[in-house]
Length: 437
Image (cartoon, rainbow, N blue to C red; front, top):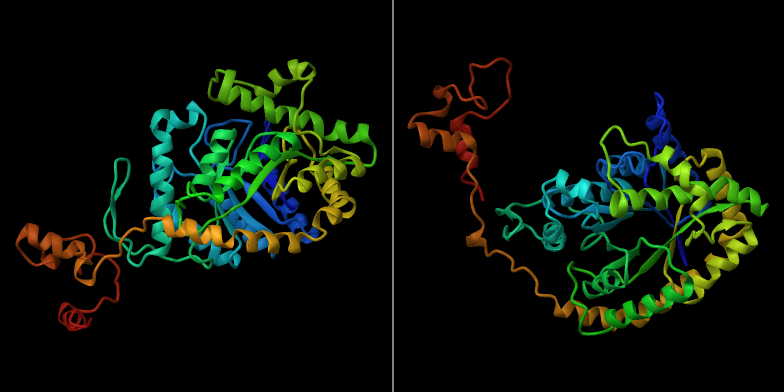
């Protein structure tokens, strides 16, 4: 089973000067440590306006920093919000490809729709349109990373003319695609679209087995029609994690933070009302935390032996990756690092044993099904050479509009009278090059 880490960048109140800076610095140090210890993945969310719960509103910036501080760990958007109102598909393609280049081909592309009204309404998104937005955004971003030029698109929710989107990613045809899932229906939708299922919910191994089996049944069936240009057949699920030799100390260090993670989700997505800049989630949580008796997903908070046994159950039923939440609530940086080191020493070896062989057998088993799924995909047709348009510069457009030479119109871009100098070719010299195909 692969092992990953999950970052929300939680900053509970009361906020002090430097709180956010320390949080980001500590997170980078934790991921550097995880890379050295042999963790396989790190995942970074994208959220907006979710005070205390998640201050990760620009994951592409943080992941760029991660790429330069690590060598082996896979770098995952968990997730990049796909509706075009959040992220224009061309900008997603450009950022993914750039991150893939500077990381040496280590990017995984998690996708999702968003779940909270405070975010959706902040970007002018109606909840009943977000699934359609996800589909258009993901499908066209994948096309942009694989086509030269991208032919353009005129959809219901997104429009763009012909352009060649650069750069292109290291991984071909594009980084592996995943989809955020929280229930059975969305897990099955991920399988139908040929993408990995990031199950951001806490399930016991017995329930996870049912979801895993159904997911792979669809991957192997005619229902699987990839939204991208490859099939990423993987299912990952989530656990809290804090390991210590003493069970009570592990709980003391990790359980309140994990409870706060669940409490804040309930506040923003289910039960709460929020006053921006005023609501104090941590203070509210303190008043009710002892009433939160049920803590599903906390089986990896404890001593090494019990954590190892807990995770072995997921590995045995074929879960491909377990992702751990540690940075939550007021969990301390030094405790997180100590837990990572103890986990790597006492728990990781058993889970990594024979992992390469498991992946090889799985890929061999799925190969004919993946090939069949890709054959069902209706690819976007390439443009013929004669249909690739010439795109005029602003100088040509303004000359046509004003009826005189651009340089004499006082144009902002090419006016030779403005301050400074740009070493442009003269019009006559440029005309010679324009004749070359």
